[in-house]
Amino acid sequence: MRLWIAVMILAVFGLAEGNKSAYFKVLMERQNPYVFDKNQRLELQKERLKAQTTQKVAEYEYKKAVDVQKIKKEQTQIKSQSEIKKEEVAVAPQKQMVEVKKKMLLYALLGFLVFLIVAYLAFKRYQAYKEKIELEKMRLQEALHEKEMAMRERELQAQIAGKLIDAVASGNLSKEQEEKLLGLANGNNLLEKKQ
Image (cartoon, rainbow, N blue to C red; front, side, top):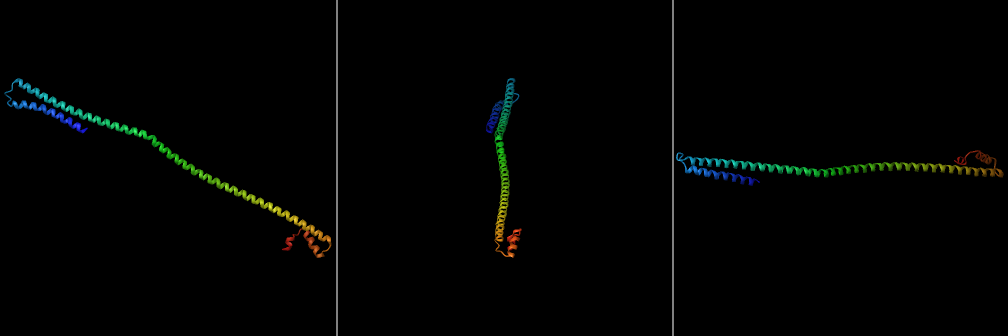
């Protein structure tokens, strides 16, 4: 592009120089201003005007070429800016998708952590409930065991009382033994006596 501008400038100046050389040629041939006649002066004026016109045309051509290059440069800048904007517009949805995916990943991670915490708390609560049920079962089993032991003790006391009655009724016991047996029958525990 710069090379083209340089070639244009050289062409314009070359053209102007060509016209100047014709003008100077006439002047050199006619160095004596008194020798000129009217036609030659007109010819000199024509050459001078022609040279000035050619120079002005060359200047206009040069300005035109510079302006065209400026316009082309501005157009390329505008095109490049518009392409950059197009790329930004094209990339914007992808950036938004990446941001949305990041947010979704973060929310999924937070949701998973909340799920883990809730699951842990539910598991602890289940364990506490299960432990409570186990304790309740053990308490019920202990109460049943105590009732069973109390029933056996009553059965044992009834058997002992029946044997005492049989022993007293048989008459083979001494007075002292009968009193002990009657004391037992009145509610004293046999096991307490042995201790």
